[in-house]
Image 1: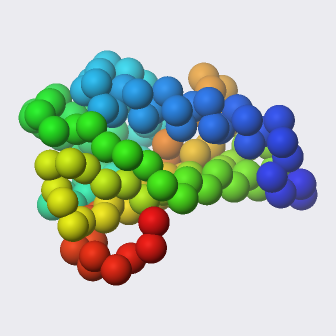
Image 2 (image 1 turned 90 degrees about the vertical axis):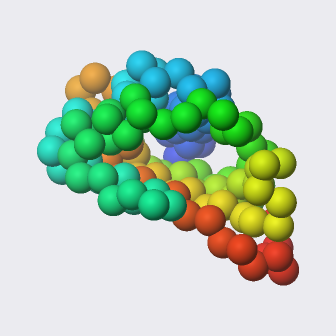
Image 3 (image 1 turned 180 degrees about the vertical axis):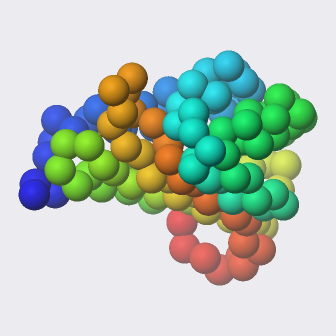
Length: 131
C-alpha cells in the first residue's frame, strides 16, 4: 500500500478545501454532497451524535448560518492507498475566543467520488494548546 501518494493527497486536499468553503458559507446542499449517503455515515459534533446521512442532513438544514467563519491550523491530510484518507485540522473562530476546535474526517473514494464516511468535531477550551 502506498501512503501519501502525492496525486491522491492533492485530490483529497482539493475536496477538503471545497468542503471548508461550503462549511463557512453554509452551503447546505454542497455539505450534504460531501457525506456518504448511507445509514452508516457518522458525524459527532460539539453537541450532537449523528448516525446516518438523514440525521446529518437534518442537522445541516437546521443549523444557524451565523458565526461559521474560522481559521484553520495544522491541517494534515493522510492517504492510504488510492481510496482512503483522513483529514485532521485545528480551527479557531473570532466568535469563540480562547477556544480551539478540532475536526477529523475519514474520506473514502466511492463510485460517485470522495465522500466523508465519519467525522468528529469538538472544541477544547485549553488556551495553551499549540496551533
